[in-house]
Image (cartoon, rainbow, N blue to C red; front, side, top):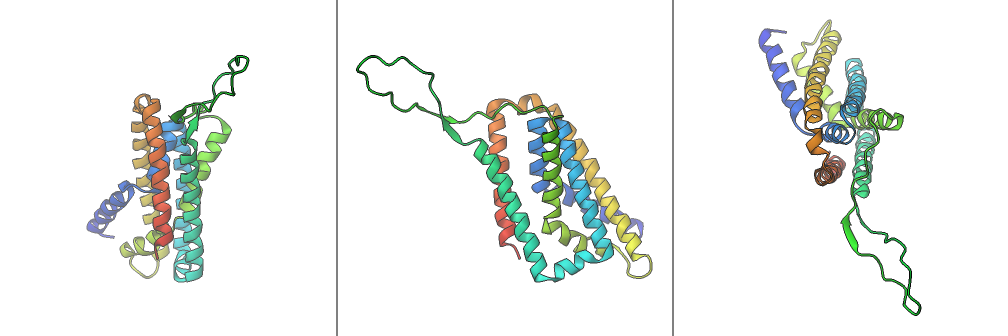
Length: 232
């Protein structure tokens, strides 16, 4: 590759990486909710899935998947359903709930007390410590599963990377190098982003702000799920 091609690839890669998507929503939510360790665990899941996609693309398997309408549709629907599940779960946790009043002595002859007042949105429960095993496990599963089932990532490795690879001997090796470069740039970007979010965590974890972030994350994931399900 010439210097111009390398610069073009890096510039285009950075542009693709910083555009918000599923990875942005999950990394932000987990880092704000549980701290930077959880954010890096999500990132680890994203990297593992990206390596799988890159390996498949280098071996030519991703092209076969994209060329098969049935396999492509199955992957697309599975990815959409998973995002719908994640978004719905997050929104459900912040649903409005009725307060349960403390037991009060009932005067003789008085009727049963009426229902308690609607207290509005439920406060977001205190986040477990980020080093708890189930938090790390869930964060990793979120990252790896959302990335593995993302058809846009498959299309990226099939359509974008080959534009910078000259056909012929060594094409597979050059594809692998470019894929590794892209993943390295993504890791660098997300590491900086996670550290920035961690610095802002004292403000972002205020109850009112945290509820907004949770609901926005849920809505974004659901919207992305619908977009993926309706895409062709």
